Picture 1 (cartoon, rainbow, N blue to C red):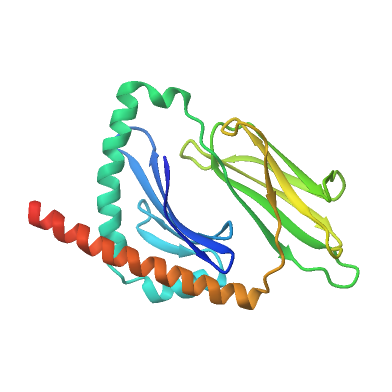
Picture 2 (cartoon, rainbow, N blue to C red):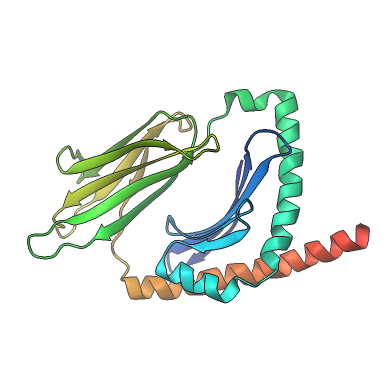
Amino acid sequence: MILSALLEKVCGNYGYLQSQCRVLSSTKKVELIFSFIFNKIEYIRYNSTDQKIVGYTEFGEKFVENYKNNTFVLVLAEFGIYNCKKIAKALISDGMLNHVTVKPEVIIRSVTEAKGNQKAVLVCSEYDFYPKAIKLTWMRNDKRVTADVTSIEEMADGDWYYQIHSHLEYFPQPGEKISCVVDHASFHKPMIYYWDPSLPETERSKIILGAVGLLMGIFTAAAGVIYYKRNQTG
């Protein structure tokens, strides 16, 4: 079960906190994951199993360093796991988990820039999807790309979910459109995800830090209210 908790638009870009409730084996064994995603790139993740925040980018690591001792994460996790178990129990009793499909989280990012005769490399990653079968296709100017594409087979995450990564090597051309088409049972039709290199990295970092700071501040306040009310009623 995935919940997009909040959406904040900034200068045509967007960031949101995503909450995932994973049923690992029974309602007594659940996992809660909070992620901050900006323009389809995951920067920060909290995993209740590991009980720690991880930064997946340079800016995510800096933010984690500043917030790693903030107790709001533990308060949110406690509250989230409690509700996750309740929902999972209800779904299992109704037999709804027998026909579950989970949409992949799709991220396109640059891993290598073009230099001289060296090609640029993009990677299209799909995370946390179910069932296993999935198809990825690179498109360039609305034409299917067959050369210079490498894929990694679907990999099990160990919690019923899968991930896959496809790399595209290319020489960038002005005005071109590059996209990754994903076909999965959780979609009614194949979904198209476009690569957008328009925003410079320095500007992107400023927007990211500002947006995540705002979101985390709001969630800190919300966690405080939740914790207070639970103590009052408990």
